[in-house]
Image 1 (tube, rainbow over the protein chains, first blue to last red):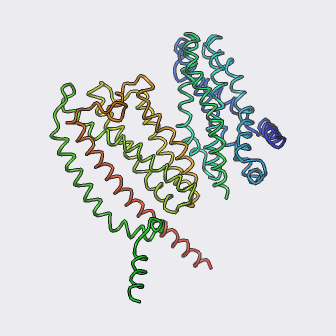
Image 2 (image 1 turned 90 degrees about the vertical axis):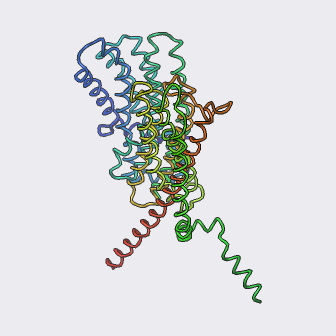
Image 3 (image 1 turned 45 degrees about the vertical axis):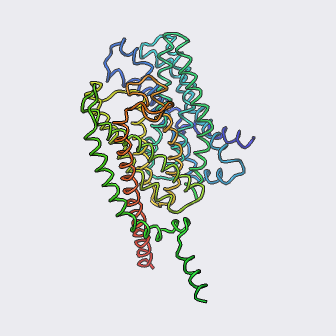
Length: 222
Length: 257
């Protein structure tokens, strides 16, 4: 257990360093949200209506961009080989890395959501609902994205391929996340169903993600 | 003495299933059966198209209902091919069967083509039927996602230089993507969709009239034979392509030495 805790602590510390890339995700999130009114027009009513979708898309793209840092840095300096060869099961190591990545890169997105909601003329109820759905959905994005990151880790030009592989798997999370966010305005009844499915997607990804990522890492590194 | 030798000769002649794992034997076998498969495909297509043309018009849709005879088999096959690739992926990951990689790589573009045709013919059918070429309902969206996954898989195959390493990466992605198949099948039941609910493979039997059901099944068999023919031909090409690659590498090594 201490080995996994050490792995998580190490990953979080590296990610929070200057070149670590955790807060770059938030910057990208901010950029996407700021770009939207320029594209869509400053109509506040329209922005409020599109708000959940814009925030969810921004969070999805931001988490996608930071995904290749999950394994790439470790692969380049050789520590990925050490992790694969160590005594902790590779599935648990992948889960630990994904958890660390979510804490370092996903949580700041959720914290930034209420602030960005102000830019989109969203009221408090909507932004809290969106933040809650992001809290439930970003783990699914990280853990399924980890599969693509593991597949692409040994490819030198794998960045865009990673995005192409991961996006179809993230579509259900996006659908239910936005559905839950938009339903929150109408009442807890309609919010519950998509929100619970979102939680289920995250829970399923906690299991499938590490196993698929470990299998990909094993075949990619030998 | 001669009887014993003949018995031994017979035993060696009989090809067991495991011999198919040998690429040379596979090439020899498929070279023999491919012309027959192609002929069978052409014949069943001729029968199917004739039956489709002579099927009655629908009372509501008129003659446009006949797009169903192309659209539905393509849709069935798009999911079936992913299933074939999943079995091949299991063969790669679990048994390291040498031809499993070849089968998976050869099937991906064919499956993508079937999915594309299903989307296009469905879109052309939707215009007169629903008034729109496209609708973001659950069935159309999930099949579009399947198409994107086919394209991603094809990209992954070509991204890794060594074919056997690419095979294992693609095998993992294929098995992860197989989760989309039940979603597609049950999407019309789980969500309120514009696409109609299941009419053939459902509890309680098909709701299609026999005049449409029989041409549909014949066309489905024809398209399946087409897939089989194209798949075997593509597998032969892939094996030959890998041999060329090995020869080129040997040549490069010899030149360097």
